[in-house]
Length: 129
Image (cartoon, rainbow, N blue to C red):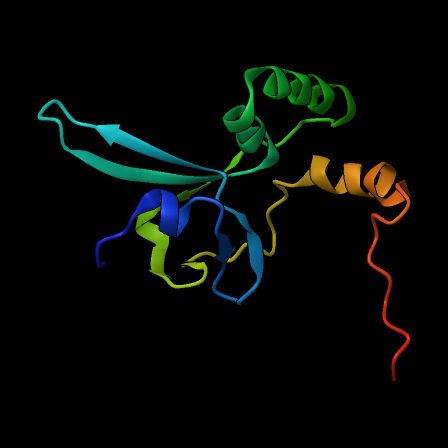
């Protein structure tokens, strides 16, 4: 793989699976620093909990309380091994099929019960024919 700038090219980019489905956006990058000072990327982290932690520890704590209160058996943040990254262009293309995973249970619940009820929060279908 060519030189990659993690913040510019990877962080906050859309992740696309083998079926060309949108998986989510890269909310975090896990790297390992070796004893000799060299670094290697281990995982891409996806999920609202990761994004909340990146923005604010208080927001992350609030999100975790909400998640554990309303979601039975909450899924951990979704991790994609860096070895599964196939190429990066306007999106991060990965060699996984995400059709059966359930990492975004809380996000769907929030969308259905809260976000969807906010006036103007849902996209209206165009009436153009």
